[in-house]
Length: 391
Image 1 (cartoon, one colour):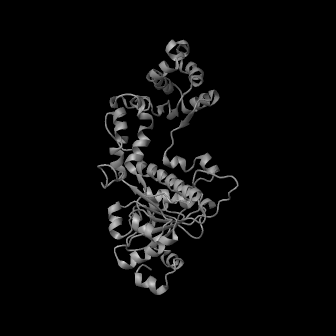
Image 2 (spheres, one colour):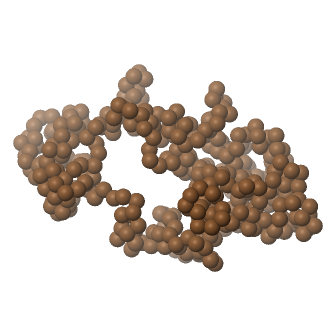
Image 3 (cartoon, rainbow, N blue to C red):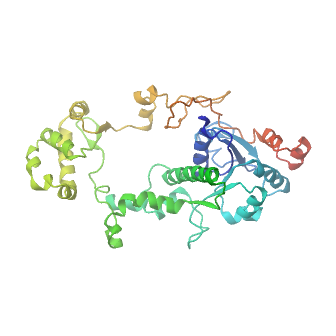
């Protein structure tokens, strides 16, 4: 971890992927992240593959640099323990339905009454001011509702989800910058932001429509959609013996590569010389890639594209990435944990900070492993911990 947020304490009342993914990033930046779990723990804990009871790969990859406190918030003892923890925290993050947390006594007003400087962040499915507020939301549902699956339908004729939990992770990144911005505001102004809301639906619509608002930016809704991005031939291309991703993007790229495609004649075409017309004729250019690449092997094309400085990459599988020479050279999967853990590969933060030495990470915790220690830090006696029935 990096010591950037050292001294900042976060109460992480999140589960599944969205909140844990975002909170882990904050832990990787040095925050003291206290993961509050119910009696059964985060429901990602038992999802196969599992290395130890309650320690799945999904859980491990989203919950390092945290301490686990097991509380039953439906019981008075569990609620009293959380009431003791809130005054010790800078930030509280949750991804429950807000009305459910309100009923437990930990809504915005109640939490701020316990700690006037607390930054209160809610990761929700839909913004509270719209008619969808309070609806249940998971990644698949938000991929459908936000237009992501519909973008695939524009290309392939059938809507599909991404083979990744993309809505959770995109929203988790929004959560991170929201927390950091709120901290910066508090530090600079002394004022604490009000209720900070991070809605999945709005976050994914913003992500999806960034380029696909397109002509609808100044036209009708029917003109939404960036056609190059949903073109059928915008995809990895078959070579004589494999697959390559390649994108001649600039005029210079195309001018250098078209002779290799046997299409030097295109360089002098009026539509190619005009940037706007060239962007409208992208399908013709993609057709040339489709036609040319099967004539040579991966190795032959890699030599050509490298020599011409045209962006390209071999299509990699997840297993290929585990032995990728670049990732191995930068120790991307190398664990740096304090103490014993069954984790032999991890996914370190991809960002780096010159002048800040990385310190060892806390391994993903077993359920409730830190309950006693954290509650003692909050001033609870052993008798109070025992009475709370959380130890």
